[in-house]
Length: 200
Image (tube, rainbow, N blue to C red; front, side, top):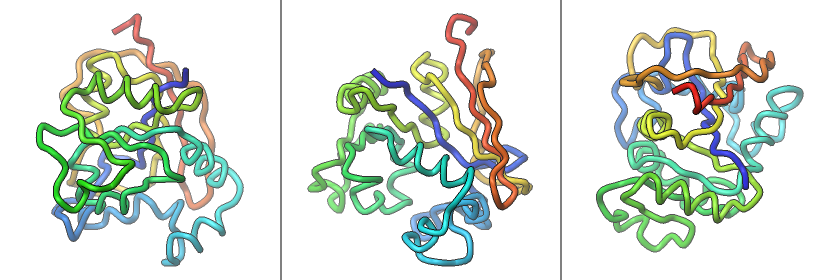
């Protein structure tokens, strides 16, 4: 069975969005800067991805090879639910106390789940030997606290956003082991950590 891996782009001051996040401004003011390592040049998504190379291509291919996605409603809904398919038809588990909104209710890959442990379990079962991509600050914090997050891949961007959604807040002590540091194109540094659950 694969691992649960958080993949997130983060500013040097710890934000994963800019301020003023809302449905028509899903990354907040200035938040697009965090994803320029993938979406450089103002091209459409497919064109930008085709142009990726080197280390950034390697990292993109890694997170696109995961077998399921677990995210929170606050990540999923402002992103338009990724059109019902985050990547290549893998199942998507959304943690929410509420049922899926009407616009997402009939998407076959999307499952709204009210319990985090159940969401992780179902995603791991669906992913088989592949990893589960964990996405969003709220999910990351809750999964870390519950001992359900195995690894972190942080794409560190050399920018201060000053405000927005912080990736890590309200956490108790936790030990991590750094397993990889890769210098990517466009100034991004990819940092991989393993969570040492026994030292929590």
